[in-house]
Length: 263
Image 1 (tube, rainbow, N blue to C red):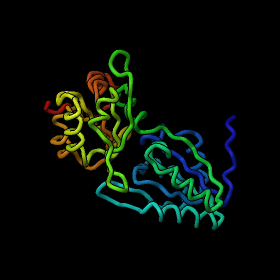
Image 2: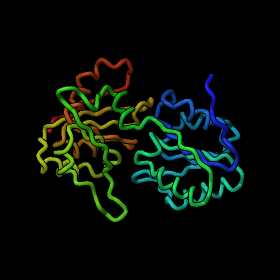
Image 3: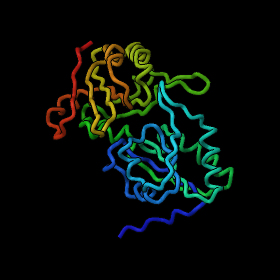
Image 4: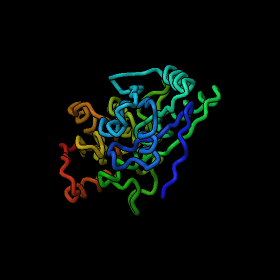
């Protein structure tokens, strides 16, 4: 028997919803969804997961999406505290894992400063779960012995990751929120020594019925990105993306896997 901790009124749980497929939720996350009075959810949490909440549960969008909705982080922090002080069981539900590019740490610091009890429930990060589901091993003996997870967005002060250096530092790059800036990122990778013909893959709405996997190269990435529909997107760079293309025909699912013109 699995014993879950009590979800006490007046507390906040931060839970990872995984890469998208409800079947990839942890048991602890599912318990939290079924028990919470109110769920503040990111834009990346798909409707299939939100549908698991009881009908009486209040669902509050509180996310950030490139080119779409954008809830200020300070406002989210304040809402979590205010709802907990109403003696509600508050679930902050995030795509992937709450501590991997999810600002979960910022929210925990705010809750701690307000003396609100909280708990963190890990989730399968998209950078691992989405890649594995697409048959892309982010490490592979003799091909990729190192992997880096990075964001493609600029920081609050406008600073960006040094992608030229990053491209030299690791065999595999797993890039979150990189689609809008992929042209600049690709140029930096090439300037840092990566070949324009190195494999790159876009994973759209990974592990959901809407999933698309588009295989291309660093050199062609910007042009291909411009043709893709709006979707949550993860970018995989390196030889393992080529392995994913080789294994794509052997996936049991019927989702489309597309190889673009090479750049």
